[in-house]
Image (cartoon, rainbow, N blue to C red; front, side):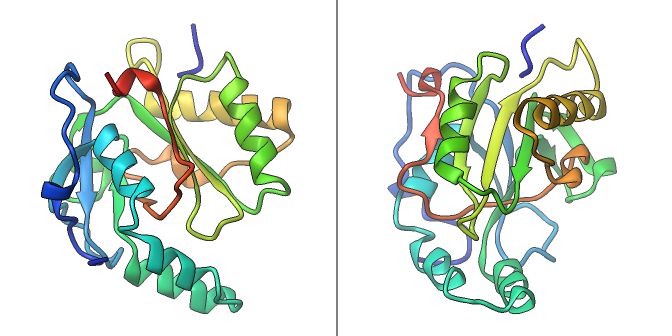
Length: 201
């Protein structure tokens, strides 16, 4: 928080469990295509981290990055990539179907001039409590998952505050869809994905 090779459901037998993890944050996971709005399971950050780091999404990710037509690329992503609603668990992907908020919010950076440098800067930013950070499916953006304290403000209030902070600090605009609690975040391959060490005991 701001402080103060199947394209369907993954085989979870191949995702190791962390038995020492205490009360991991849970959120909904959805199989493609994106028009499928009914979640197929509940997941936590460590499970998603392990999926992203593995080769589970490698072929989809590499295929997407060879597509030069933006419309074709958008359609390919929508039909081939699993996604999560990191901000909570849902009966269906819409704000009104929220079961429980996870205390997480997704900040999406698109078309970043230097992804590597931005990643370094975000991880060094003491004002952001980064839980998960990975490269976007397109390869020219970042997905930043951070904690928020819902006792201090609403999801929307945090989003607006974070948006202003990012604009002021990094001179970047973030995807406005992050204001939606049910915001979908596509998962992809990134063998350099970062997870907050507290999630790995």
